[in-house]
Length: 446
Image 1 (cartoon, rainbow, N blue to C red):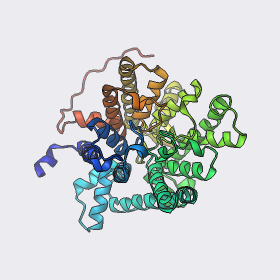
Image 2 (cartoon, rainbow, N blue to C red):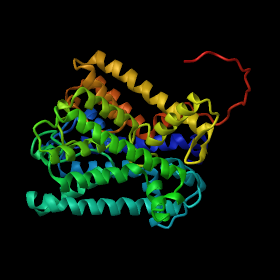
Image 3 (cartoon, rainbow, N blue to C red):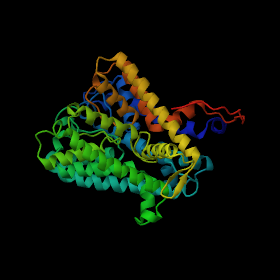
Image 4 (cartoon, one colour):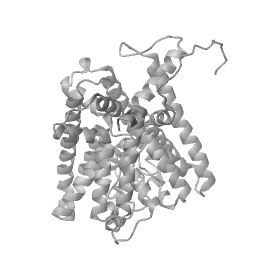
């Protein structure tokens, strides 16, 4: 084991930890006890579902309520919770509970897995992550129980409240609404403020990131004292949510929102603005979205949530750094600045690398699935963006995809959760590199 530690890099450890959870989840979901009819689930379906749950995506080839038994649903919930928190966070929580000392190697792994910028205070950070997670999920479950218990009975309503609260906070998108109609998600609650606003709040808090929530708590909501990362995340998240809220209402008022009262239109547009940020729930029939609404959803799915959160995508800060870098370059400024602070050039280069990896993955996979499937590029691009952004929204084509397309989506979901750049580094990283300074020569760009 010590020899293996020396050979594997920290990034590779993180990637392998997620892979181990997925394999364990696949084996459990294949068992007859996991399916409602007590039959074996085929390996590809189990692997797709386990990957989707662990990578907190929500894409499903079988309806969660109709196919999986209570045991199977519990397995999914555990995979979602572990995937949302991160395997290393969960293991460290057990270490803290058993009072085992966390080694330097484990602290470095946690630093990378949680997006922290320092090794110090990792135990305190883990405790805060767990506290934020369970407080938010408990509060969400209590609010959802107000609606679900009268409708479904006490125990079933309580289970549905807990399941959907965890799924929403972890931005997973799995639901148990198949008891009303297969793959219906929350379309039956489109006009219900309690359910939709509770889910939207859980999605938003989960997508902000534990570091941001912790910083807001420590600084007592004092904006000027916030770290630059917190300010940037909150600003970009607010702009994306409010801006896309207005745009969705504008685009869909005569399409997917047509015929609804104004209040319900506004509520549905708000939820549709929040959910593509890697949540996976929907109250609208996504196949009825206008082309503008569908493209806006793809844009939001690719951006995703914030670093160190339960969300996927290229992340809000990455998109912000790219935009700021473009503005600095166009105005012939050497430095990229925001909120009177300069962003390191290495961060700008990393943001460009992340965006390039994601966009390349979306392009290649969309091209491949278009060649394999009879569906239009609108539906396929939506599906691919949903997978790589670990969102879970679909226009209904997931169950009809062939085996090859499902495998491609599995790879995208996995890459989207561990991070596209992290996966590339895990496959190519070497411990020793010889520093070589190459001659400089200019080329024309643009």
